[in-house]
Length: 87
Image 1 (cartoon, rainbow, N blue to C red):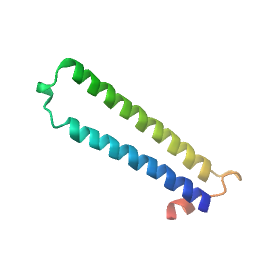
Image 2: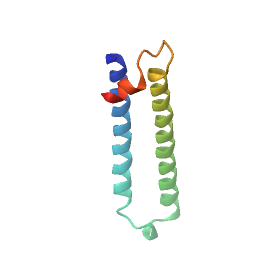
Image 3: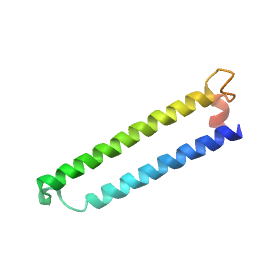
Image 4: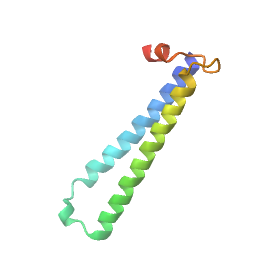
């Protein structure tokens, strides 16, 4: 159980770091009205947002995989989902 909780804590730390980085970037980028941004800077913003989206999607896939591996009903998992969620 402790190993499962440690993996979950690591996964949540990664999620928090990505969310904080993303929201900080959005807050900073949002200070300039889009009407004052040229095409190239706007295209760079778009690419950066796409990278954040890709990172979030990857993180979700990894977390779902981790939760599935940790809490599925096979003997290898060792932890029931209900038990892990209780913590």
